Length: 448
Image (tube, rainbow, N blue to C red; front, side, top):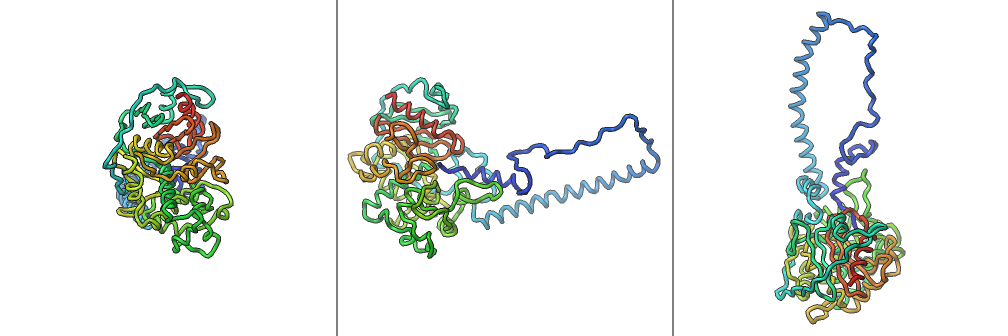
């Protein structure tokens, strides 16, 4: 399923200073505190003597001196901790402590503002979506009952919700503070965009699905089973590369969270070449697959991913607004596995491009054969769901729909049967209620 957010891992790091201590996600009482013994009313209390009074009086200066020592030592200790945290983040090659702190307090949809980006300019010939307003259904299915559609959007912390029918914008809704020109993070929905770029490279003859990863990026050779990974394995999440999506609270800053924060993605890929299973033998959702695919595309095309997206998709499809793609550092490498920041209408255009078999503005932008590829589930399921070339095929429905999906509730849903595209951009939970959300989106698509 889509990736979990690394800010939670930063929080876990702060909470889990002792791996033997009981885990807590916030402040709370001590574990099994021992109450002070109650005084026995039958026990006589001794009257104070001159000695006890003198001891008490002399204790006060000692207490004040101890307090002064604590007050002096505390800033020193804090300074050491702060200096240590800066040293640690530098050694780990991840953002500084202030940026990590901001991650904990910034909505996931806007965290793209915290990292370096490469710009994806709006098309020189933008093509506004034609509008034909229609009502949404009054209710949608949600967890075994039907709820008002507005309640569904509010419950799932939706920021923007758009519906296209036959290429026309039939419904457009935004929460307060968000509008048509607000850039929102794609999170892992970017994986599906990388797939479209891969389809173009394959059509151009620059890449083949059977190509081995290490033949394109020789620096990754191991001499072992890793070297058998193909482009097809990366596309279908069958490489077996062991960079987990789930995080162990006792081992913070590992897995995809570390990859999200690193300032050197090529080095990260090089340092993580262990396998969970033999390449091609089964499916498992791992963001490292898309990151490696992005590095492959950059190598065979000789250009950054954002530039490829600009010239090969954004401009020809008539994108209305400028977008950005987050980098590992200034002028660095795109985070291929996540983090395009674009406006809701342009995400809708991407969905419509796929629905139209890769055509937009009278041009074949994505090869028709590639649309068929992503619309047909691959042999191996991924975490129990159908999957093909970085696009999800959720269980149920008419069996023909599929979607780009990102953590925190990002969806670019495509239903060829009803000719519907739905875009839902949210700040909802980690991998939360995805099947239920698809059931609601399907109900909306089927009411047209």
